[in-house]
Image (cartoon, rainbow, N blue to C red; front, side):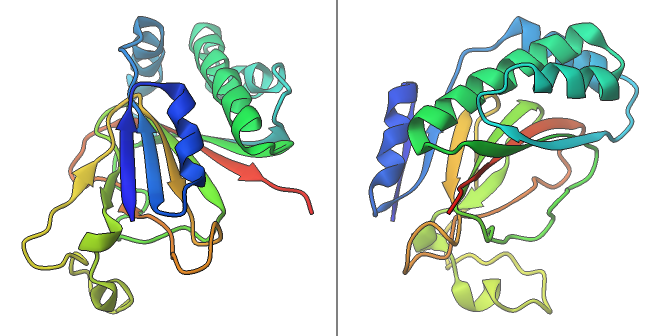
Length: 205
């Protein structure tokens, strides 16, 4: 399995290649999102806002974030980001519904390496260190499947990678295709405060 790092959103279509496990699109720093993140992280309190919506509903993100964050300026900036990403996922995947989650983290949400039992998931770290992941060819599945131990599931002389902050990173899950168990990843350890957006496309039968 291969992966693709790019700065072109159109390259997200490469996720349809059977030998591509992850596509990550880097983006320039956004002062608007940086300001929103500072306002949300300043109280140093963990917050989670999660909802399911029609992918093309551009009003719901603003309403949900305004209600939860009590900060209209930050809510508007993040809602704009969410609506833009939802539009990309709709065009790419044709998913009519999506689950969106905004999370502030002061400790790892998923401290152990794992793969998600979903079709795919898109992650964007708005502030802080990006999600850690391991290339499929570098994963020691024997260690990964041993739930009794916390050893990093790495083959000898292989390393852990990080997704870039602000990147649109689309990870195949275990339900994407036969023969691939999904991208192995975890929350970074000792990363300080983070603001993370995650998107789970929902596919109707």
